[in-house]
Length: 229
Image (tube, rainbow, N blue to C red):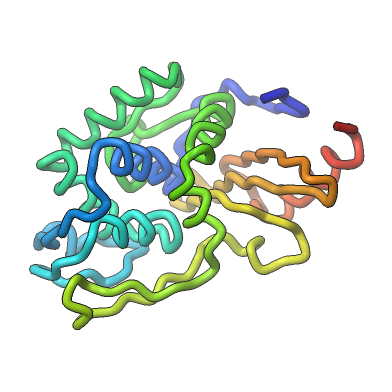
């Protein structure tokens, strides 16, 4: 929990699909992973990054949460919200209530995806708290380190290939997760959890970065050189 370096950490910024970390947390804490979700027209037609859910498809909540975390599927996030919250707006209210309980005072959610909105924002300080909280969840720990996998509908008739948006998982660094984000207003965003060869873990966060993976590696390299645990 010690802050090793910070810059503009209190500045409120849009966070793109890092939003889906809270979507996953609420789904895991308020939903039942074994539930079967029927995909609505709204979810199937959601734009942007998606896993191509089909209207009427039946799929487990477990697979949808994996799709949101690994592939950053917008359609999966909407399907989660509609199932767990009853409708998207109610689910977003649940996300904001959870943010308050976690003392994320500079954070507000407007949607479960991370679509651009002046009402969907956070800051680095809050996101560091959220990342620590999220990573304590074993399901999230396991999902965010997956590079690729295939999930299926309940009857096995429809499959979806998931590919992680975290390019550092396939690198020489021991990256354990966590979540990417990218929209026009938010820019390139990334939260990582990286472990060094001594077993020490750090969280790095960059918002509106010109080169999120390169900046993350620079931050991690500096932290591991500059501090001794």
